Length: 168
Image (tube, rainbow, N blue to C red; front, side):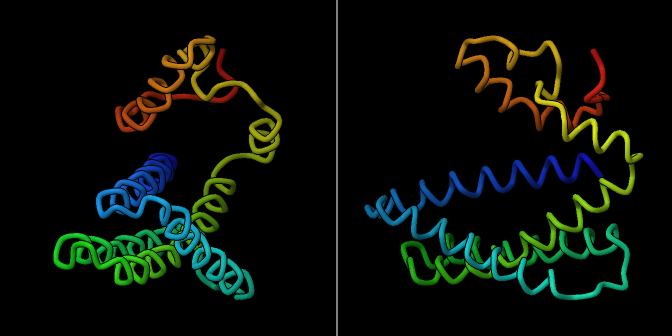
């Protein structure tokens, strides 16, 4: 569960960068904030809607469904970029659709993750303010090393390296 959540975080970061690059390519970089706001708005609206529903399915099932919906709602973004390049209205609509999948995914994923560990671990994780991987480059003061460590974290997550917040 933690690896898919880490990958989702990487997807969200990458999508934000791609949006900025996309609008910059068409000469309207100043619109990047508007496009990110459209994406965020639909996520916020879906959070309001999904927060009012009394779910009967488990968090894990909802997470898998939400992950599938996110994948399906990413297809319009790809279509807008590849088949209709430069159509910013269509890209805005695609971002709005995709953003609607974010809040349900995060809510169900974090709830499932919280249920998969004991209450003491959840409380301990909330209190901790040290790096995810103690002793890594993010402990050091060099900004370049911190960026490199942040970029490498999804790779480490995929490699299966066990990391625990209480390890040190």
